[in-house]
Image (cartoon, rainbow, N blue to C red; front, top):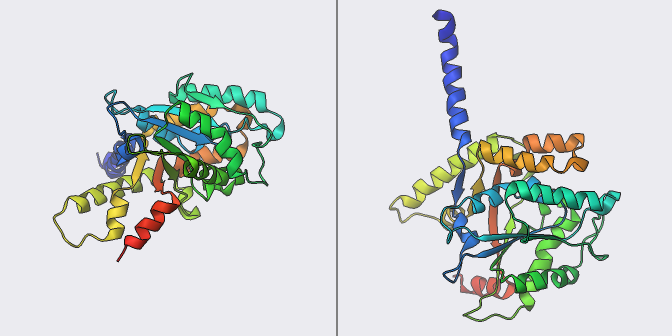
Length: 296
């Protein structure tokens, strides 16, 4: 027994670690799929290249499509603005994208990939906001999109095509007419975290779940000392995958066989974005100005 007793504490810790990691979590994720009508929201995921959907956005896709109740679960669409033809593999990557979206659950008929001369996979050039808006416009209008999800202005990996997407989406929204009955779509961007937090592997979801729990305790406490910073963090939209979600994201990445070079194996093993997504709403410039003038 003495020999076995030395292992009970590490085994207990491992069991707790496994149990804590296995369950998904979310915080205010419903804000991404809020609908102004009785119908489910129409949410569009806007990406730059095939494989973006599983390398960066899988936790959110799986969380949104996993919501219970037909009125809570949004109609989720995907629009990829290039076929990723930088190495001449555009046709292959288009097929790989279809396989990945099958795994993630975005059904055929709600996903598109475009191939235009102005929006080609290019690691050295940003795309024009006007060109992005022109391509994006008919999808947003015809599908009655209420929310657009995309990269932030740092693009997670600083890829210039990623960085271009929020600018193009914001440009489109600034040109759309809207009314109280037909509000303008909302734009959310995926937060780029500092490099020191990007590659912690399974430690990332554990820290995030602890942070969510702590924020909920603070939010639930009856105190008048809640700061503006705490409130903003508490209301952030966060999706955290469990083991099943991570494995599904990994399975989706396996569909992109042409991209499975050594450094992507490192990425899927350690990247925070295979586990955790955090979102911030991008307000139109006029609303930002209004909010700033209203501050004391």
